[in-house]
Length: 125
Image 1 (cartoon, rainbow, N blue to C red):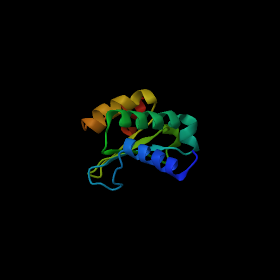
Image 2 (image 1 turned 45 degrees about the vertical axis):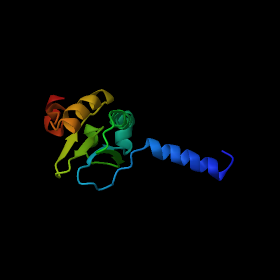
Image 3 (image 1 turned 180 degrees about the horizontal axis):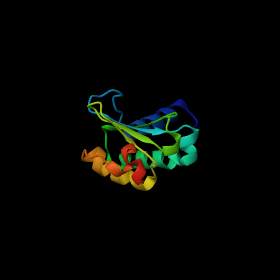
Image 4 (image 1 turned 90 degrees about the vertical axis):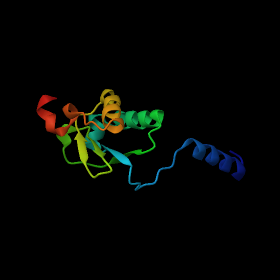
């Protein structure tokens, strides 16, 4: 990059490839991945990457994937919380990248919680 014009061109290309979402849009679904040291040690980085990549690949513009610090249930990490527009929160525990596709398909797209991955089914994991 040698000039301000080149930098602006790079910015414009990047903006064209990114769908900007309204932070608090009423229909947004938030997927929050716990990324404290306990979550990272348990494998949260690949889970976060899998959600980010799959949401982008499917073009799910109403889904925001974010990260947070400690959720407070270290023994169940990696933890992912899904915040629905109606205020309902689902907590998925012991997440792996392999589980992401099913959660996106069943929960985020079709509205059906994947019960066996939730904190309520911990004894069954």
